[in-house]
Image (tube, rainbow over all chains, first blue to last red; front, side, top):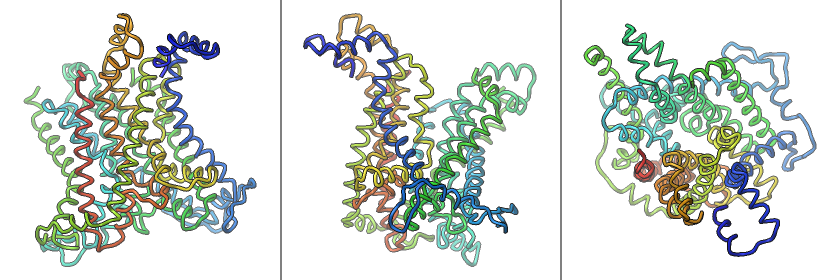
Length: 327
Length: 264
């Protein structure tokens, strides 16, 4: 954009103020950079920051039947965290809350995401390792083969599991027609494991690339040194390869964990009532419950919980160690 | 060394094979059952039919939704690619302070759970701006998640060629404008094509933001989602899903090839 006006400027006389701005942009390279960046930054601010700020504002309002009372109130947060004398139990943990559903479902969503993230990393790592160290020919084809599913419809990938795990689905009907079972297995669909398997499948393509990149970047001579010094293949992996690929594992973990906590499609399609997650609650509060302020407050609590967890995690790993890995 | 590692190579290769089956198997069931002559998605297969595809083509609601999705997808991919390219040029060509923070900020929409983004955008649209949700609001939501992809593609493309090409052109007396059109643009073109294609398929496939931001005109994923509840519609959803998967597959294949063209 600057380049365009530069040329025009040479021919047409312009107001002095604009010329001064241009001269200033010409002198300050980083200002020119920010000038180029500004449309994109404005879009992200307008479409992400502004909505989030609005949502924070709305979370302090109150729904009164059909209208929203915009006077400041902490009622929604009180509704989420209001204490009660009698505890509700989830996984043996007592929750002394009046309406424990929000906190319990948040915890459940976090646990589901955590397990799914671990599963994703465990299945993606060997594949990334294979790609980085074993594949010599047609590497590009392999990479494309692995990344294509990432770009295809998430809805359809999740839907595929619904037809696999369903009561009359692929697994059950397959087992029946092979004569391995007499009647369909009911426990396949509409539960937490179904959600975890589906999430693992849908997100593994996201995790694979960061892990692959971190493995690919490892200086091969380090591995040769380890072998020359007598390390076995396993020792070499544990002491050299694994620590050096840690940044990739962490990036992959965060890329999967953060968005899946609030996932809506997977629990809706394969979770049933048993596999419900916090995203379902937010959605139903917003539409069916028509309580947008409370939905906003729950969303803010979800974002806050994720942010705190991620910060704790990164702090636990230690920034020094991360930096050392990079260097 | 190779002889010692022989058994592990095999194990990993076996895993890689299983992984590919896990990755593609479930998705390939959609086309498989879309040709199956039965309303139920179950084994054993009953026979080959194309009737679900003809049913799909005859469905007027699907055709309208398809047109909407294409409209949104094309506008989103053009807008996102322009914004992504500008941002990528800024961060690769200028030595910006806070570069990492800025790139991270633009990438942030990818990390946010879509449901929260969708609800927050809808609150802004309805409660503050007082706009009726429409295809425009869907497109706005999609631009937000497509810009990061476009920027990433363009950064890797622009980093791939040397700044000195542009400098040489300027030193040899070309104007900034002709340097852009004759040096920068042709070199960046494969990246731009890749970005356009990836943004299009991202927007075309996106469900959750569209779910919240849609007015009375639906996009294709919304129609698919609403028809998932109706068992009688399931086979034609399978047919539609197969077509969408096929289209995405081809688009992504082209885009990945374009993106890597001429990169050492």
